[in-house]
Image (tube, rainbow over all chains, first blue to last red):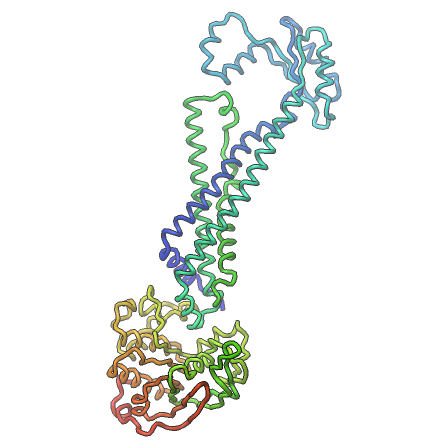
Length: 294
Length: 237
């Protein structure tokens, strides 16, 4: 026998209404459990954006002597087969970049007669270049005429990417842990609902209701609680993102402003309600596994 | 219709609720099941309704051996049997209509058809004006009539009643029995468990007596009840 949607939804709604407070608490706990890993995912996504393009970030930064021929130096460096590209950053461009990153210092910088930053060359390596190549190129570059200093950024980049990876790992671990908490929260709600409807379930069974007809409304109720929790978490996360974005627009921060630039992608955002629904369903399976039986 | 062959039911090793029960109830019969408290009346009905399986023996209802019915088939079997409980077993949060139409609702019968059927059976028990009332708003007698309406709404071939008048005063008990008699006249086999011997005598139907789990006596009540035949409680149809 197939269970009719009308019966299913009306019974699930009735279960939700009969324990309105427990339902609200379960939604809140599920939302909280999903919000925290969601926030970590948002941070990891934004920070990761910087680390996700290692081929575009400079592996070696070469500071040239004032008055050195930057183009000639760039050509010379580009002769190395391991180098993909050499970006020339004149003093003015470096100053402009600094002004954008530190707008609160703009007034002080405006009074300077000459550019405070020396011209630099940013060396981008080919993706296939071996580890340690950046350090070697930096050493070679430092020996060139017109070069003041040459520093390898490889170590920093590696540490940065490791940090992002750790953030993602922490998000996943915490996410898994809190999802289990959400499952248990929904499971206890369903357990309470079962206790509340114990007599009723017995009567339904005596009247000829199949186990599926008895359990399905509880499954639907639990999945709906999880879905609602996921949607609330998504709403809270978006609210947080918007609030921080507004704050940073008003009060720019030298670090946060650099990476707080985008919300989760649509599939990643939809993962929250999807995980919530799955957690709710899992919670109901945990409670109903033999518990609705005599 | 109903046949029991050497049916025994034990709860644990030392509690024998029914012992070697043999009997036959024909289609369309009205039978009382009586005996003192603890004699096994409720167990007897539970076995017929497949609320419990027998420990041994065979139970045939409409030719089906319900003792070996797979648990997945039990709900479908129960829908062919109407049961009236002493404590009514109405769902408090559902209205009279919802209580009666529960199985039809699960089956997805159109709402209008559910209402039509519920109205018909409620009219038969004289409660068609209480469709939207909740059980708590009804008297004990009215709740019992709702339970009867629920039991007959699917037009069962067998109606079981476990002490249906146990909580009712004598006048209401008479009413309920008239109702059962009327349902029986329409072709439904009725089996009523009761220890109200006065009521049994007035009805003049076949009686099965249980004593300590054994079926001791099979016979007719001595005094037929003229009232049932002469003055039906409600018009038929």
